[in-house]
Image: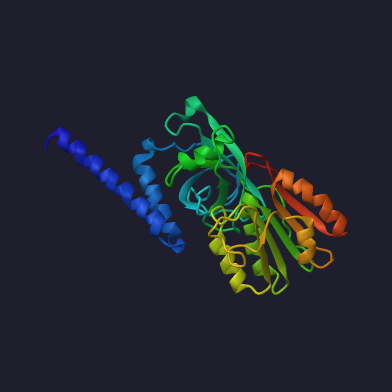
Length: 323
């Protein structure tokens, strides 16, 4: 066998392995997440030169927690709306160790190389990202909004350059938005646009802990194409009688049906909330652009005296800035 033929054979084998990993990621059920993780690790061990090489300076405080940055593999990317402007990233630890639990509503700092193949020269970008699912032992999930490079270069790189099998770095979960200390107070979640993502972690958790106490979710987006996690929300609303979902579309498209795809046309405002909620003390959790959050909070305080109000705010580039 000639050297040229042998080289072509090696390239063919590598391409076949890459295809197998991609098929596993896209078609395996989530119960097989550990198997996919092992496949990804085997691929990285063989072909790490083609990907961002993990750092070697990880310091673990114990088997589950860590300091500074820890290497994670992108297991899977899943678009959360029809327009594909919102994407969830499923991240598994490179070292295979179990993940520590966290408080729903917490966030993580994600660091990615500006250039996957020459990260030492070009450096890194990092951004605070809200966790968008309840604690899992095998993966973290973050959900991001797509923007252009001039608005948020981190977002553009995550959508266009980061794929299944790539390695990025995470700091341990931090911050505290949500507490389960007193669930006797009715829960109200208000999400604007990408702000619905971190609220899904709170909602998924609350539905497991508050029994049959009522929960309200107000969600505002542009139209059905931009509607985030529509199927999951519909399923939760169908299976939990104590959950009351109200979706607002600011500019419904011609295929959007009121009463089926959305409930009200326009924006979430205090008048709409007062029409739905009875005067009472509530535990409000708001998440979305800071302009919307800061506009609504004073009116909520004025109307619902004694309520608890917590929020997650994003800047104009859809990056998390405060909670």
